[in-house]
Image (cartoon, rainbow, N blue to C red; front, side, top):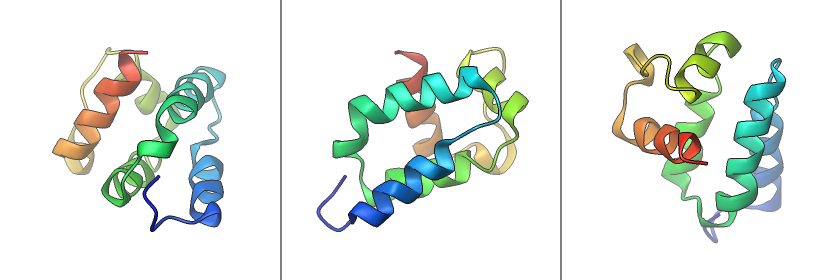
Length: 87
């Protein structure tokens, strides 16, 4: 994460990433394990918004069965979802 983000911010992001579906947990945890150190504040805000999505809807997006839509259809969220899907 950027220097402006604290260990508490990092822990909060990991906590928000915990999902009700194991498949989501695995995809998101793998993404954070690989990219957490490089995430910007913009990325963290986008991820936080993405984590508001329902578990089944999020899984469909992460597996490419549907696209982000509505309030989740932002360039930052789309970019992060594509990174997660590429893992």
